[in-house]
Image (cartoon, rainbow, N blue to C red; front, side, top):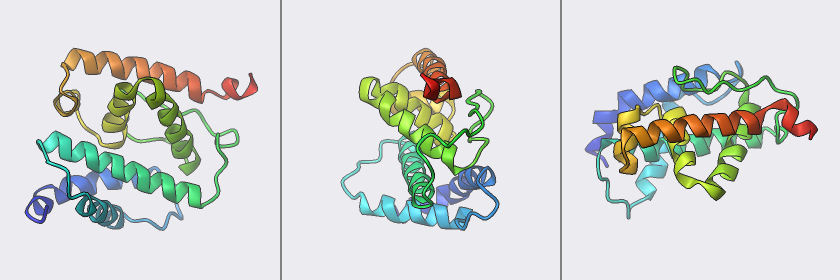
Length: 170
C-alpha cells in the first residue's frame, strides 16, 4: 500500500476534487483530506488482495462514497433531500450536481438497488463515485464492456425513477 499511494495519489486527488467541487460552498472537507481519509481506511483493510488498478480504484470509490455520505448524514440532511433538484446521471457527468442531500438520497437508492441487483449498484458506484471508465469497470467486475453499458443504462433509468420528486408523492 505504501508503494501504491504515490503512484495513484494525484488521480485520487483529482477524483476527490471533482466530488467536492459539487458540494456546498462551506464544506469543511478538502480534496487532500478526503484522499487521506480514504487512504487511512484502505490501510485498515489488510486482507484485500489487490488484483489490478481498477480493483484499487473501485475500492477507493466505495470508501470516498462512504466518507461523503457519512459527512452529509452528520449534517442532518433529510432522507430524500426535501425537494432537492433532480440528480443527473448522464454518461458525461461523474459527480452529483447538487448539495450533500442528493448524495445521501443517491446512497439510499444505491443501497436499495444493491438489495436486488448488486452488480448494477457497483457499476454506478464505480462510474459515478470512482470515475472509472466502462473498460475499467468491466475489468474490476470481470464482465464484458457490453454488460457494463447495459447495467449502467438500466441503473441510471432505475435511479432517475427512484430519485424523482414524483416518487415521494406516491
